[in-house]
Each structure stands twice: as structure tokens, then as C-alpha cells.
Picture 1 (cartoon, rainbow, N blue to C red):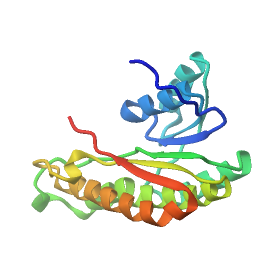
Picture 2: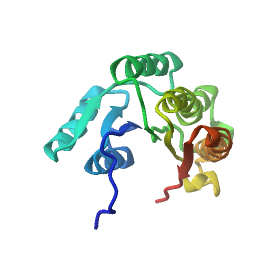
Picture 3: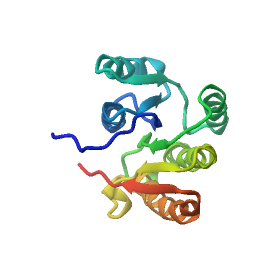
Length: 192
């Protein structure tokens, strides 16, 4: 694929769910365009492999383990970012969970809580903290990974689909609120 002619040199980008899949691809691409990437996921091992790929291509990446479904870990992450870097320009809310495949009538509270904590609560508080740093940096860009399931729920993925619809609505609400702060907020809706 041919590269678009623009540069992210000097930009600090935080990517959640960066240890594999879409998050890994996004982090590598941001780095290829010059961004310094902060790789976030629950486990450092997977992130380290992605960081090595990025540095082998001449990029810069740091590993910052964090469970985005846990508010205290999000708060600690942003405290570390503020102290270590003092800025943030890009947030990619990509981490997601789909622990239940079945009829919603059979789902229990634990499945509901885990899915909502990672897919909706985590991104909300990630944006809240990131937007404050971005405001201090003069603005920024936030991209939330939703899903086509947020528009058209898939069979046996009802709870996941509900959270992805929530991401779409949350994206629109934050886009309106943060526009005055020079922060763009968009969502991606991947499908199989």
C-alpha cells in the first residue's frame, strides 16, 4: 500500500489493545508516519513484541501495561504519562472484549460487567483523561474502535453489540463537546 504524504513526527500516540490485531496494525502504522507510540494492553509480553517490531522499522514505542476496564489502572496510566511525557496528541481506543457468545437470556452479570467495563467504561475514562492532556497540548485526535455490530447486532453477540452501539453514541457526544478544544473524535466500525 502506498503511503499518504503526511507526518506525525513529534506526536505522542496512545494505542490500547496494541498487543495484536487491529491495535498492533494501527500502532505500527502510526509509528511508520513518525509518531512515538505508547502501547497499552493488559500484558507487557505481547506489547514488547510489537514494540520490537516498531523499533526494528526505525520507530519509537514504549510499553505501558494497563487493564482499561479498571479505573484505578487508567488513572495510574495517565499519571505516568503526564509525569513522563507531559503531553498526548493521539488516543486510539481499540481494546475490546467479547467474553460471551450466546443468547442474551443466558448471560449473567459477570459477562455483562466485563464486556461493559472494557468496551464502554474504559474508553469513556480514557477519553476523559486523554482530552485533559490534549487540551494542554493544543488539541488532538481520538479514534474509538466500535464495530458494524453497533449498527447491526450479530446473532449471539447481543451484549457486545450493545457496547459497540454505545461507543458510536459516546463518540458523537464527545465529538461535539471536544470540538471547541481542538480535539477530533471519530469511530471506526470494522466488520468480518
